[in-house]
Image (cartoon, rainbow, N blue to C red; front, side, top):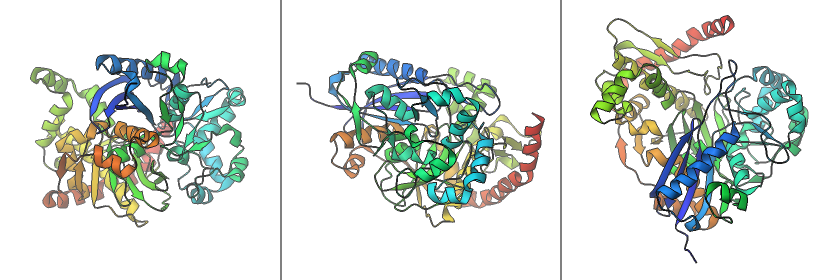
Length: 509
């Protein structure tokens, strides 16, 4: 009999899927990444095809097994994480009835406004712990009901990113705690559906799936899924969780007060708390660890801002990178390092797709303020990094209003690979930053869930002690921190001055 040696993680991200195989000590045995298409059929509409997700998952698992000579019989369990607020109506056969509406999708503003009028936003926040915003799933369900009634009638279940992939593996429908906060009729304190609110909003709870703990085994890999992925049938698959929550676990955050700072496509922070601290302008969800919560700030401004710059304006950095055998992002970090804190008066508002917490403004847009003839590409790059860090500080300060205290940030995601960007975040927030396994923290969190759920680890404490290791520490520079205080106040003031102009711009479009 083949002994079990590995854990398989599926990280269903905003722009790509990462398949990673870990050994039980958290070492990577193989990794594969594949992208999928994001479609923008109308302003405010952001969609992906879930069936394409599964195709990429299948391709990735086959690839990582073959390329790294991994025997699928040696895989002990599978964990899946996924992006927040992806709304996927499926029929009785589990087939998606329309493209997934992503967290970036903001078409359901009308429905969100109706929810506020129908049930009262304060009441919904008291139950769900989260603001009523079109990014969440509830308004999207109502949008489908109103605009695509035939699809709504055919819907058997509403799934999310990770629960759809878990279904494809196992044939079982599931809803886990960490993604429950996307539904405004999910009680954030009890972890149960509120039928009276669902009825009030005209949504049947029959459309919801059974609720699982994130590390709980939902089912096993079916023969059909085994054939499609190159795995063997019978491998346990756990419910998995929200990517930000898995990333928080993979960063080593398992005790109250510990905080993860996320530098992926989107940005934000997750503070672990042992009771549901509700702030109307922040995000509150369950941690992937039972009976713990995460007070979160989720912004659109993460490494995606620099990715946009690289794709649209980064030809020079790409050429330099090829000549020097480096990535264009390493070149950009070098350029940013050459510029003074504050970018010599250039400020960037990172609202590239509206903004989530703490301003919740779907009409906000990215802005460079302070451009002049003396500004260079390097100034723009550093100001982008600083703008993202300002948005992080904005969320941290908002969390402090309800008593959440943060001393050390565990920084993960692609942006954490940049020593310069990480130091900028330390200088702006005034917080010490620890950098663990930056590139694979989210996948590691999903793998830990699989390991705990399948009995590879006896506890989350044991799992983190075996797998999470701090690689770097960034202490804030007090001089830079003092400089940034003035720029941060101007950053906040700029939004207040421009928010009416954002509305006017939206009307013109």
